[in-house]
Amino acid sequence: MEELQQVLEKNGLVFAFLAVGLLTWGADVLSKKVFASKIPGSALAIFLALGMGYLGGLIADGEQGLADLPIFKGLSVLGGGMFRDFAIVATAAGASFLLIRKSGWIGLISLVLGIGVFFLAGVALAWMMGYRDAVSLCTLGAGACTYIVGPVTGGALGASSELIALSIATGVVKTIAVTILTPVLAKKIGLQSPESAMAYGGIMGTSSGVAAGLAATDPALVPYGAVTATFYTGLGCLICPSLFYLILSTLLGA
Image (cartoon, rainbow, N blue to C red; front, side, top):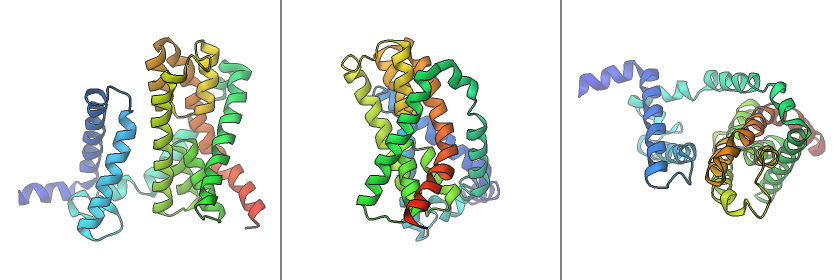
């Protein structure tokens, strides 16, 4: 066991990828077998990772979660600034305007409306929680958009790990709500055509939540909702830490 531990510690980054992969796979199995895919595997994986990180911090009496334990020290690299910046660039590069042109004006209007409304809702919630600085308000507002936009924005603005975790939790709650409520409210809101699916994906934005919700409603609608929902994430990663942050900074006089 000591030799195995030494090998894992020397190959920390490789083991970190393995640990994250196993966690993701386990969360996906748990989602399908236990929750009948009503809760996305990605949402479960984030919840489990946050819980494990909290326990790791308690055990090691540190501030980096599981990375404080020698065997998991590779997670500090995998979750560090280098991979964070890579994720920001990769996500932004994937935001092709050709995709939004395919969805037409419906997709464009829904994207602007969706990002704006959820960002403002997140900022309002953060304000009620006592946050007054632009970085905190912008990070939590971005988290209300999706649990990907939140940490990307927080990382770009230099937000604390607590704020980033809170933004992720906000996005995960939104994803679960969208997944569960979509099939329940589909008929009442007229979610029965490709056009309505594109508008819905643009307004809600959370790719996993929209895809899972539409799959439970009508699998044929999933590709249409996924187009605008995917672009929502890329657009949010671009404008939340830039345009929206500048607006908040100006309003707050920062």
